[in-house]
Image (cartoon, rainbow, N blue to C red; front, side, top):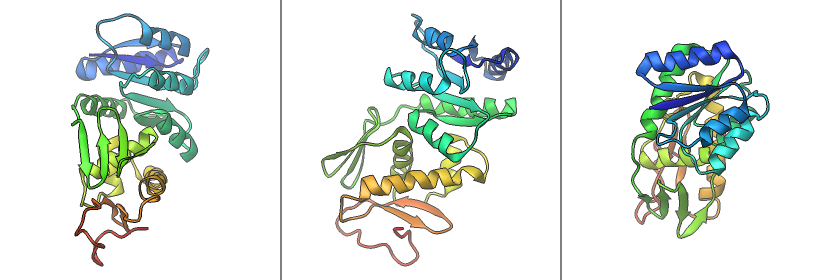
Length: 242
């Protein structure tokens, strides 16, 4: 397995690369600017990268633009973003651009290693081609969503949140669980990011339809209920729409 570390701090980049190798035998190439990182991604090789660790503030080609290029080119390797900025707008923008996880600087190398392992493990799990919940259809290979035959355009993070709720349909998913199992964020500071995406999903997935599928259980989390005949309204102690 191979990783690419793109960071303009030579000592930090070397430490990350060394930790990836010592932690689980992941060979890491290092690029000290965005242009070099993009060139390495495009270099002919029989083994594509299994992980990219990407700093935001890079010379020559910034991290956000490099991330957009990666996703626009169809590359799906997980990307772990590093940045000194940890405000909600920045996090939301990065996740919408295709980042898989986010680690604010300064960070512990042990935490970075744990997140890297989780990202690679998830990327190696082959999804089913189709996931259907009532009239909602998710193509997990193409990451496309349709409801009642109507295509719904989602950002990468909106799709991930909806997919996880669909995989756990009928069960209330706590915010902390969604963060831990999908994005490896730590702490409560990121829970409001989940609220942003659930709110967007309500507009896109539920807004055009009479039957609602997304529900909130106050103080507990979120649930997706298939809109099939006989479902009816949730009981008083079940997840309710918000």
